[in-house]
Length: 302
Image (cartoon, rainbow, N blue to C red; front, side, top):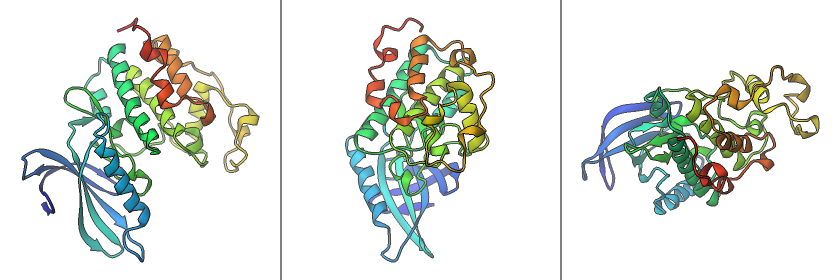
């Protein structure tokens, strides 16, 4: 399979499949370099491609113009055939060898605190850049964080995620609730703090090598969250929430983060707690998190 435009791409093999399309490892026949090619279907309206999607593509190109080291680069956008009321589109990204989920699986003995600090800093650097450009990722999880061959982080699946799935998943892992903030689970409006919540979950996972909250439904996910961060006060419960009641949750045998994963040092635990706060307005921002003692103090446990 080849795709003609300014470049010619030859698909080598499928490296991921999702609800909205397939990711291929492909070769740019002009340069001989490998690329990641995501095939997506864009819904059309009476005027063609929706204006909001065109804006998102423009924004994605603008973000890539900054060449941020922790953002995966979009190299090209190719348009294919129209199928009924959908347009076939190919998004061409730089190829990165693996995602963070795979990277964790390949390191069953875990990581040093210093290595976790470096990975976490790069995740936050990328998210701070997105937030500074008024972009909310909305789906941060290990499958959407890519790790280069020399161990650096690249954020993927951002910007266009609000209009259609443009994920760079390199595994077949199904989308889960595990990294979603409470306001998303409760069906409320949300902003940049949803990404901070997800990062807190991911930093914990880098220490423990397993997810922190493994719920099966929205309600079950919230129960597991409250068992660790505590149940919010009744006056903190959002009035807009009608389908899930504050009274339906009972926290029994609350567990502390450092008891679940004893190898988490105190500064890392404190940072995670600043991220995993029920009220999104009280969560630390990405820029403030980068100045947290976890990153600024001399590491004691490496």
